[in-house]
Image (cartoon, rainbow, N blue to C red; front, side, top):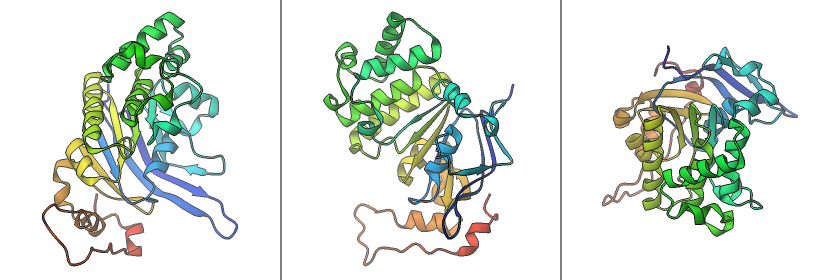
Length: 283
């Protein structure tokens, strides 16, 4: 049995416009196994669009094309909205950037987690509550019974993000897509949330896609890194060797990172080359 959980080949996303169409993704391709894959790049590079295309969360106006877009043996290009609803949460789940907007303010945290369990596993209310309490404990929230009855506005950012992770993992998906899951958190809480993700993903044998602007974070946490520029993957490298990247865009991103104790006379400016949109010299 193959360890390849997700296959993406030549993925294109195009939005129609009054003057001309906007190409959001330009032939993106990668595979995901039971590993931690980081996707980095500037805002607007297409990182989140790729994740949402896999989840079937792009607006209806988007035109999605691909040579192959497959989750295991499931052809995602053939799924309608009903098919995606069965798949989301159960086989692939997505943790969004800010729990304040991702969680329903009208429902308690625990009820939302339990609802996911009941929807996908057809469990009883009692079994769903028990599973939700266990997941709240798994994401290291103190006093899960108390947190279960809190509303989203009553929890901190770090607690809310842990609750989001619990909700996305309670149905035991094969793949977790985490879209900037720590950007709204302070440095200490960031490390705690990443440690929880790492432990749960490794223990369950899942695949993780971590979308982030933070090159330091991705290089230290992930196994592989995709670097995206203007809707295209320009370079793929082993995360621990990201500092040895060769593509000039990746080199520019690395050069723009601040260094403690090192003052610069001026901030480096990223250089961009239109030829990068068609460049395949950096696999």
